[in-house]
Length: 340
Image 1 (cartoon, rainbow, N blue to C red):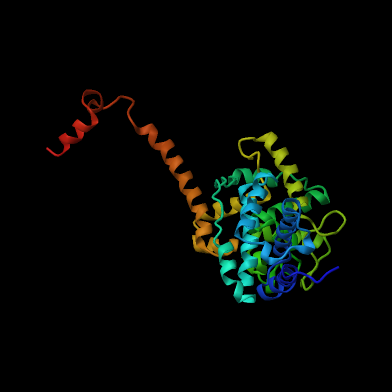
Image 2 (image 1 turned 90 degrees about the vertical axis):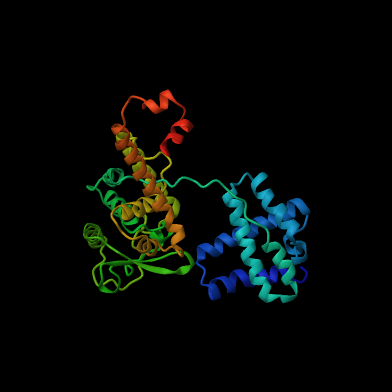
């Protein structure tokens, strides 16, 4: 085998050293970026007949990247969102290269100038408080697995945790530093503290006692595990939610959206916090958002709900008949009379 290429050298340095050690990227972020470059290697092999061990930085110019993201969307059948995720990974790598190889600064910036493709903003799915109550009442509290599932779903909703945060949370994170708080570690390995309300706190304590975890919690044992006491997976949590969502939907299809996801619980909690009067800045911190602009989507949702409620009430107050100015003269003529 020949000498490693410059692409292989810098990509290895980026994924194994720069991202985890200098940026503090989570293992999930590193895995996502690695997957993007794995797919890029497949593209180079299939479309340009360049073997992975032969691919160099000289091959990866603006035109190459443009063809790659088009191929991801059009030939692999991926969504615009996935296309943009692959481009984000490439952009991040070439930002790293700018300081590593200053002589390639111009080439890097040409690739960085490739814009993301605009995509339709998906509607945020969330449940009403009645929907949440129905969903959380579905697990059978008479069985150990049912109790575990009830606590898990209640925890995700109550803390607005991302699914990976729920997977990674440990016993030590619960009751953090002797307070009624839980520490969640999210994107970029950034941690935040979320207060636990009394009902959830009591439920969690009962669960921990049943699982054999006694205070003080000073170990890194996972808070939630599967039936084999191994780490839960994102897919495993999604399966649990789907099971109870389907049974709840049979009882009240108007309360449980058909395309509900684990993230819907996070969205639901954010909307309910806002409706309870919690300031948007605090909600941003509780959700672990970098910018309040990301959190503003919930304010728009709440505003739309209030508008519809007002329309429903106020529409009953309008008379059924058409005012004489609408039936007798044109609107423009009527407006003219107002100034007289």
